[in-house]
Image 1 (cartoon, rainbow, N blue to C red):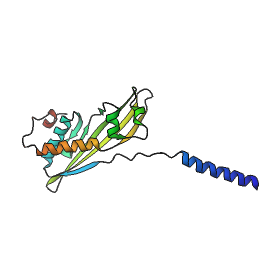
Image 2 (cartoon, rainbow, N blue to C red):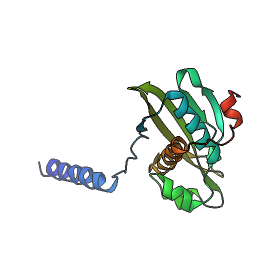
Image 3 (tube, rainbow, N blue to C red):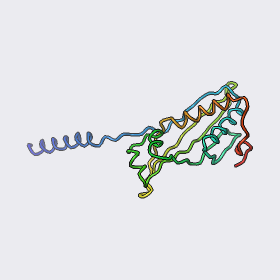
Image 4 (cartoon, rainbow, N blue to C red):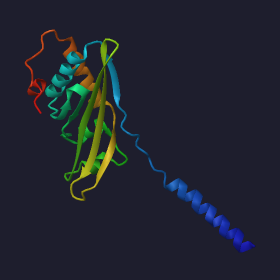
Length: 172
């Protein structure tokens, strides 16, 4: 009986101690950022394309009729920019060592609603270690989305739009 009690106590301690030591931080999934703009779908779409062009974010594919756009991956320039934009389970300095990199892509969904346009931006961020080949999906802190929404709003407020980038002409 004493052996059974000792074994149960040891097992209970191992479970409790193991549970305390293996707490894992779970990164939330990337949630889309949403805004409603009081502008037509065409006008808002044009502002989205100009905002991406001004931000040097290249478009990978675009389906204007369905209101969908996806960008190419864009590299973060350094660990500071990466840390300001991403939340990862691991320390970003480990990823962004001389052998690591971070990058993001943005998906845009636009839909006409109530005389304006609903716009949803979803940013997918990943960190990679170029030596080991491992990748980690990270959550967005919302900075990429905030900057894009600000540029879109500025594009809608600008009464004299700049010359159309190639993406506006339907290229791609």
